[in-house]
Length: 157
Image (cartoon, rainbow, N blue to C red; front, side):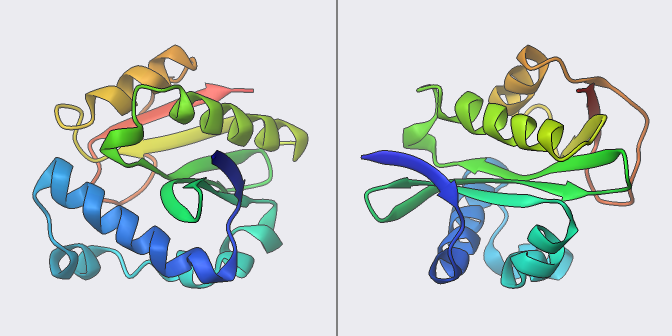
């Protein structure tokens, strides 16, 4: 059975493996390269990076297997960021990404945020994600961070 729930401590390494798997699939980037740019310390300490700062971190599981993730992270009092939104290839196109995104946006609204931002590395390789975010009402904005990402979007809640 597929479910979406708050991340548990024992799932942190599974989430990292999920990200490595998807980055290899989409961008042909391997774990050692990814770790150069992203230490994933936020996943190691979800409590201080998300939960303690008006954020959340969800995982999609199929039985016990982590097949997706997504989070809301505080940027400032009124603005949060949609982060770590990933779904394994075999689980895409089933509405799970939309369901998780809606849960995260609902959380952001209930936490009092006025806007949600996100970034994408490469629109050509993340066409499904870009389409999902457009359906959710995210619009183009200027760069708001110093990541290697090339696409920046925002949604008013």
